[in-house]
Amino acid sequence: MYGIVNVALEQMVIDTYGQNKWEEALLKSGTGITHFEVDKLYDDEVTYLLIASVAEVLEIHIHKVMNLFGEWWILKVGKGKHAKLMESGGASLKEFLINLPTFHSKVILIYVEMFAPQFTVTNIEANSILIHYHSNRRSLTEFVRGLLVGLGKMFNVPVSVILLSSKNEGADHDTFRVSWN
Ligand code: HEM
Image 1 (cartoon, rainbow, N blue to C red):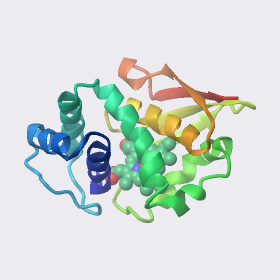
Image 2 (cartoon, protein in one colour; image 1 turned 30 degrees about the vertical axis):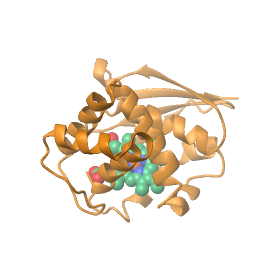
Image 3 (cartoon, rainbow, N blue to C red; image 1 turned 60 degrees about the vertical axis):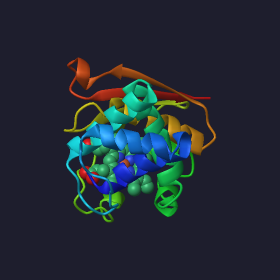
Image 4 (cartoon, protein in one colour; image 1 turned 45 degrees about the vertical axis):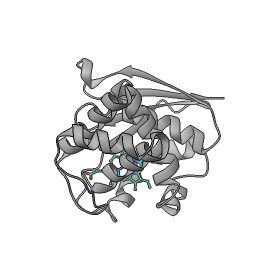
């Protein structure tokens, strides 16, 4: 994955838990990397090792780290460095979610070698929608849950995100129901 992912994780840990915790997690990860560059490609395994190590050092469940990281991605990376891009996604939570399937076709113009996730949406109702998440990568389900919660926060709309079926449990892909009031 592009280094921006690892750099964002680093920033989240430093800002929330302090520099020392990040140094500790970095060392424990065993990646042997001490500095990440935003535009450089790194093996996906590096990111998985970092996330696992952060969970260990902070003594919080790995799913929780991924939830927090998803929220951070939307609220700090999305709304920070890529604010214009995020704004182009839609003017309301519902609009953004409906547009999600095409969102990374804009992202890929910046990160040209990325392997983008695939989203489809179905069951669009007044206050809910089903988000289908397809990826060849493993176990990013809880990151996606965090992203969806983060999108709710971005629009100041409290959301409920329920995982209806999961690739980890044999489904073809992950399906979430996102509901709001
Ligand atoms: C400005 C906003 C965003 C930027 C710049 C961005 C950029 C990226 C980048 C660089 C990657 C790494 C892929 C790679 O290097 O191969 C990635 C992955 C991913 N992004 Fe985004 N993204 C943005 C918003 C979103 C949003 C709004 C969602 C969904 C709600 C999302 C869902 C994901 C997921 C799930 C992955 C993991 C890839 C996979 O599952 O295979 N991203 N994104």
